[in-house]
Length: 196
Image (cartoon, rainbow, N blue to C red):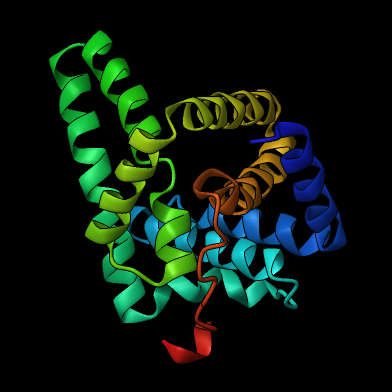
């Protein structure tokens, strides 16, 4: 996987709709203050990014795609499967929590992008993400480090997060075919808030 090409392609897509991605990120950040909306908003941001990677026109309302009932349920199921073991790890001790967090970040890196891009459910997305991580450990670790570094830089100053959050989501979706070696079916359903 060519990181330089991935970053360049991500930037090219990101800067075309910069304002829309920033507004989507702001909605995701502030909307996630209410816990119940965090998972579907993350789904919506990924949905927005997937449309952008396909060259489709993106709109601010795309960030609400996860509020369609089936997407809401699946996004929360994915969130719970990933977060409960991490939470238990931190309850036991900080070190196990950190180890579990890093392990889950590596093996489930592709889960949300796969869920959105391929239209699969939470469990199938997690299984496919695990398989991709096992098959491509080097690329996956590089991507995890890159996502962590970019988001750490972004969170260092608040304004940075609204840039790095959608950027890294775009990057992960663009990375899917690079990691698998074959373009995945990008059949993103055009779910919008009007379909809730």
